[in-house]
Length: 314
Image 1 (cartoon, rainbow, N blue to C red):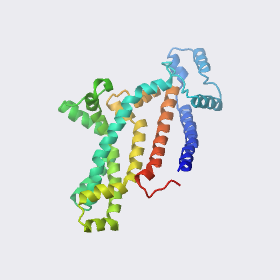
Image 2: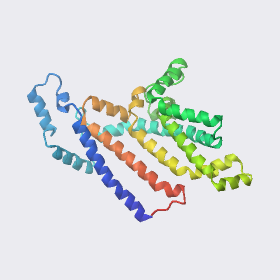
Image 3: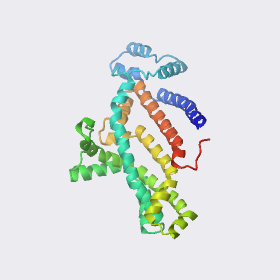
Image 4: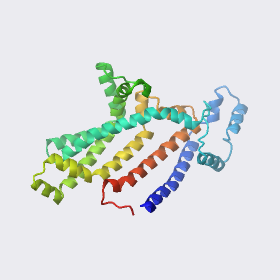
């Protein structure tokens, strides 16, 4: 087991190395000049050149990358070009709304998708199954931002029962945070809810066709016990995989949701950095988001034997 854990952890190192190269390459190849943006519209070429030199933007690409990578290894993501604050501190100040939003969206996904997927599998071919399949298609096809605007109009404008922008922070109390998070979490989790529902249905159908399920039914076990105690346990691995990937993706991909609901999270920070061509912040957000995605998938991978005893650490 220890050998397996060490092997899996070490396998992450080259992945992170490739991620750093991709993140740096994408920001380097993107259009725009941070020095020109920082200098302003009325700056002279000499002033822009001086800023470029102070930021080491004139160094060769390899030198810039190695310098940036060395700082990352030391735990230094650099400073923002505009605010002059450490990039790590800027990201840390925006993590709370994004993390709470991702957790809330995951709860929404699990609460809706598991019952619907199990219901569709148990009533395969019936009206419930067709309605759930229709929900899955609709959830995949409808753009998330459209769901967001419908939620804003319905609950924020028409009924006026929910706040539609901002994030109050945990200091305001759990109830107020949940009120502000409910609509964006529903928007963020809607598309993935449809996907998880379809995967739950397909996995459950495969398990329900097994011989031991027929034996359980012949012994008189009710359908609820079969679904919850036997079926759900066996489909935990594929569900954990897709839920883990969804959660990791939401941590780094909430840009649209935060823009629609004006939430000051990591996604909004990334948008602001792109608008100002703040390269260190862009690189820091992308790098941390990618590393979080890799680490969450690693944790899900390591948890497989805990969810299913048939899987062994090898």
